Image (cartoon, rainbow, N blue to C red):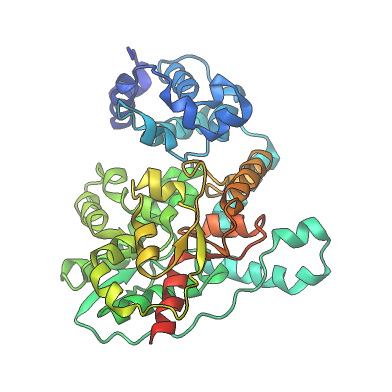
Length: 415
């Protein structure tokens, strides 16, 4: 694609990156077939190719309108188009650059602006979010139907976290909303790794990965959060005391793996951020490396029955991190049966804050995904991201859990 970027952007690092991405697009349209919003809306401007045209026009200095903002807002940033694209177009990076620019040029209405501000000030702050969640749960029984469904039920307390006793150590990202919504996920990860001779350690002051603010176009705010996490982890990393930084929410994992790229122009943090990204691993990558040891821990179930699971692979796992088939292999090794799921490449509609900001599209995608996940009559649904888990729980008739919790339960039965 030929480009002629405007003077205000062309010589900046962002402009040079955007120019290279635009030039890699060959207009083939393969992305249309896998774009969830295009499948629902049928509008070229709600497809990756159409949005690329809109972003190109803006970067070349043409007027930016609320229409441009609307079509970019509707994008889930699921990055299925990146998996499909034969030219390797880095669409996710381009849309982040462009959204940040649009935000500065197009004023939002007061309601939209306040909603986005509120999300940025609540979700990334674990203490604030936890307090508000508890308050909502306390009055949940008295709320009308729609509001009641919007407030998650109280999670069961996490089972014990094992004492750090092994020579092999890894850090874990605690996250922002996950400790309140599903505290057992990280604890289950710690127990599974403990059985494999690895101690999982929390670092104080490491929390939200920065994705919430960054993808709500408060990009400087998001980057500041990333720096805070790097500072929290750095002493462990610098002393080479840990093998990896484990992330159990794939939405956070894809962000931490991109710290090196997002901070590459930061004279203080660039080198540190690159080291952090190199150490960042989804929990599935850790277990994949320990698969033989895991297999030895699993005892065959009595009788012929195997629990049948339907696995939802989050977009951040399969498209963002390009991790496909690994969780499924781990679940099979742990003794589960996997059901057939059609259209596994499509988003469930959670997409961070998308389910709040674009509820109608999100609900359509949720209904489609639940139908697909339940079509082969599984007993449970498993996923790999807290956002997807909560979103699926709101629409599914079956129990939904993080897959690492199911592996932990399976190993507990084997001991």
